[in-house]
Amino acid sequence: MRPTLGIMLHTGDMGYPDIVQFAQRAEAAGYEHFLLTEESGKEAFSLLAALSAGTQQIRLGTGIVSFFTRTPTLLAMAARSIWELSSGRFSPLGIGTGGIGFMTRGHGMTLDRPVGRARETVEIVRGLLTEPRTSYHGKWFQVDDFRLREGPLPAGASVPIWLAALGPQMAAMSGRVADGMISNWLIPESLTEYRELIQSGAVSSGRSLSEFRIASLTMVCVDPGDEEAVSAARRAVAFYCASTHYHHIAELAGLGDQARRVQSVWQGRDFDAAASMVTDEMLSRFTLAGSAQENTARLQWMISEGVLPIIYPLPRRSGMVADHFSVLEQAAVWAGLRGSI
Image: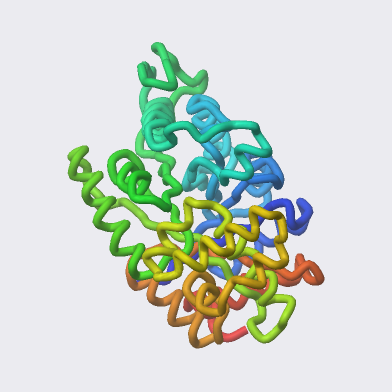
């Protein structure tokens, strides 16, 4: 199977010139996708516009932006704009709820019934991108005979819409309405469950999954032999443990109690103590923090299963820019995109 690989970053960690160069390096190394998350970093679509001008071949997408902070119509407009600017390279439009802390503390928003809202968002965005006019009457959104001024995408063109999913309900919804699913902390147990749920969702809607893709954020420790690098990886896992969205996967891995203990300390805002509680087993299951051989085996397992690994560097504060580029090069070798560095 041809190795395919994506890469992402927290856009608040680097300046614009470095991010453009990072995307260019990923393109040269053979990465398929360069994806932007948003959270508290740079606004995603303006940065994608810059990356459209700075790259030639790599697919540019979001992984993810929140469907609570933008209406479906605005998401469709953004997707249409970046598709045009990138000469059709915008793929995918990855959307999700956004992190609980980011949404509640940063936006003051409650994540009310996200699964139903996800369905309406996907269906409206797809309608606006593919139909001359769209009407939709849902629980959250009312669209009445509306069209984008530039019209839908040209015949034969498309922007895949991927849903971020961790729990069973959102995974099943991705099978019902989306073109793909983005997860995190992927392990064999969760992949098996996701496939069953995606299939169930697709059957309920009478959809084919022939073009459906599963992708997974894949956090990478830059140097498992360096204490600062391992500490950065532990802190990243602790950050995710703080969200109850991740506890189902932790349970599947047999690490639910550990995740809840980390969450309890993190919520007390003793972040260093919470990070110190992340065990080596948690690092091994949820990140690439092993030897080159171990990391190669993990990535090759994902690729052989048809999963798109999305490399997510976990940089040290002392080497923020250099660590991103180091992980990019290492992962390209592990995945088989290129020979040794």
